[in-house]
Amino acid sequence: MDATVILIAVFMVFFTVSALAAAILWFMAPLSVFGMKGLLRKSVEEQEKTNRLLQTLADELRHGVYREREETPYKRDDKTDRVH
Image (cartoon, rainbow, N blue to C red; front, side, top):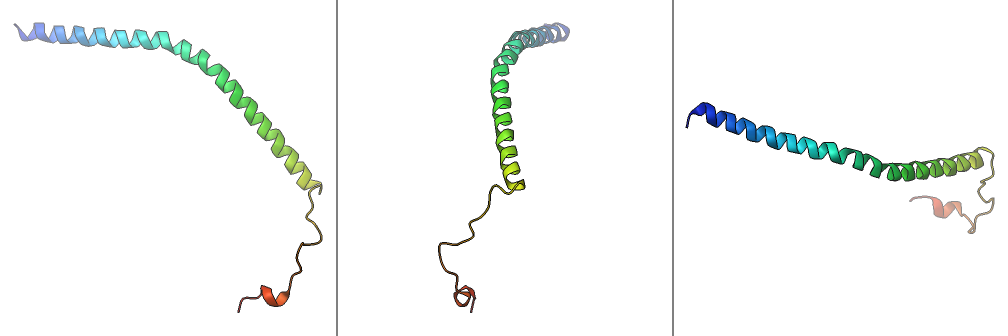
């Protein structure tokens, strides 16, 4: 066989495999996009929930709703708190 015929045959096989792969990806892309919509929507809802909780916490801290207790459950002794 001539080298030109072999080169053309290799090119045709490569072109066929490439076209088949592109066709499969072209068919699968819309399915994956529509499949991701629900997951993205759920992710956005969770992020909005987290943002609302963080905003509530920030408001409570800003307005002093969260205060530490004045009394501690134990009595502090300055002598025991020092490092020798």
